[in-house]
Image 1: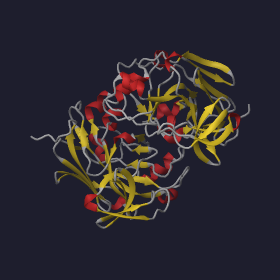
Image 2: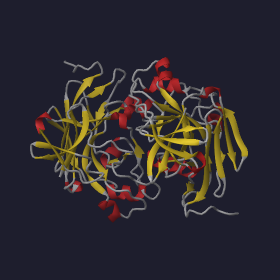
Image 3: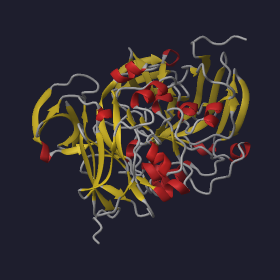
Image 4: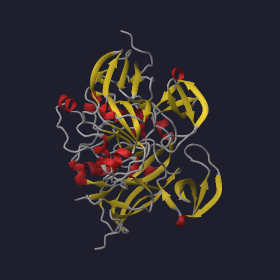
Length: 260
Length: 260
């Protein structure tokens, strides 16, 4: 099943995607078992929002060997996690805005995202597997000069629109058997086995919940193998087979695409 | 005015504190102008929750010169912010749990917390001042060995119960003219001028909103001058004059206070 959050008459609602139609639901599928509200929207007319606004937004930094080696890092010997901020989230088809102050490399990373469906603490690997509501796609956009110049990742990774997520949550997929592909204007720029991780989502959830209670709606972004440069005027697509394609145009802060 | 979030019949509700009585409200004071719902609870019987569950939980690390020098740090030349996680929040009178794996220093820091009341981006200092809904108190608990051994602050600062906040939000106070006092079992362990900051809350909000939209209910923890060691079996109070006192017992993970 595919579940989205969409804008309908100016307000956010949940929807179930069935083929080319979004059926509006009377509540969140993560919190209960909502029913169809009797309103359907053709998929092509849907205004997508991030499929969930998490209580806690977890992000794995270094989780694919090639990415770690690219940055000269050390492969972690245990799963450790960081955080991102909800203001940065945006939906499928909405613009990623390159802020006026961004200089140097401005990069996308295509990431698998686990959406938690249960409250859990001290979870076993099996309990971690059972705790997953579903899977979506994240684009972890970074402004690298800020990442290097700042004490934290606040503006390099958490500026508005730097965290597209969507288009929907897929509940019926084995995400570790898939392929992640990043395209710019339709041209493949990166492709890797989604499951080729140092630690998988269930390793992370088991480790996090030794100390931390995870809650329904929390999200865990799983890191990326490759980075891809973004330029205003282009469109970046992240596809994970079995889930879908998250597509976002890149624009300059003034709001109009840059034309070369 | 003082606004709390409290547990009533097992569910969270908002309340206005008037003297020794909590008047239950029919909605959040941050989102609108709720009315009294006709239910009042004596203050002594109130089960306090964190006064707000933020969309984004901002935290300033280094903002008092003495604290920076204590850690051999460099006084920041610009306001930069980090993040904490909602799972770690707990309310007034609820226990701070020293997890079984915590070794070495386990420390409290008494912090002023700004609660945002408006959506704002590219805020001037004046707009930042006008954006404040009110002020509360935070206890920024840290497990220092994890802080030093881990790549991020995930479990050192974000384990469950490590971020008490409350008891309520005070809307009518000049927080920068107050005094912060940290007591263990009633004995003063730290005392400092709340407003003696490197950058004040309005500096931070103006800087953050150059890149980031802040939303109603977001919180900004302002850092501390001093750290105070916590031991299971004791109670830690953070008082900020004009706001109130946030009090939390410290217990071992097994749930029973340690008796020496």
